Image 1 (cartoon, rainbow over the protein chains, first blue to last red):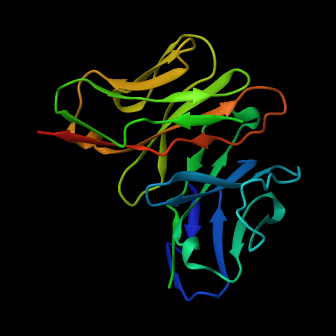
Image 2 (cartoon, helix red, strand yellow; image 1 turned 120 degrees about the horizontal axis):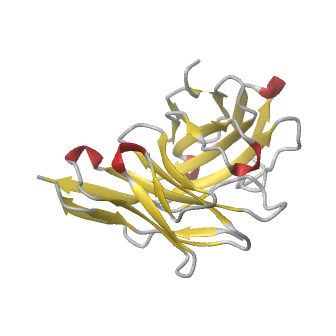
Length: 115
Length: 116
């Protein structure tokens, strides 16, 4: 597609349920990032995938959070046993260049509300 | 560790006046610096970046930013603001040292409001 695509755009779930958020990056982009944007908190780094290298998971807030990237393309962020503090907008971005020189292209985000 | 500070939660300017959105950074090596803009209910859009070279960087929509190594700053500027520039602006940094990783660290954002 022309840009980074994320689904669902909105997700309302009950506390304790599992959710999956999907990201389809720009075709050919080797780097994929997940960030979380909470009200008034800015962007919090979650995880970074680069090609076939081991992902940088240093930003995942707890072991309830996991992500995978299949075939070097689509990525899924999974949150198990959701809590109210997980409510946020989850942003995915992709980049074409290694070494951090390339700018990130962001999707429009998945807004998660945990009741 | 790398970090970014945006000291102003909100900046208000009148249309036609110059605007400045402030950003300071901290990294171990040479900084790679970025500005992004977020319009309501949208993802972030890239505005400009500094990697090396000229300290004054020009970007999209008439924005520019000045890299100041001694002050560890990368302020975003525009000579004449438009109402349509009203949005949330994020500064971001990546540490250029070898093995520093490729993730960007973002500031908390500055809400720019341009008034008629």
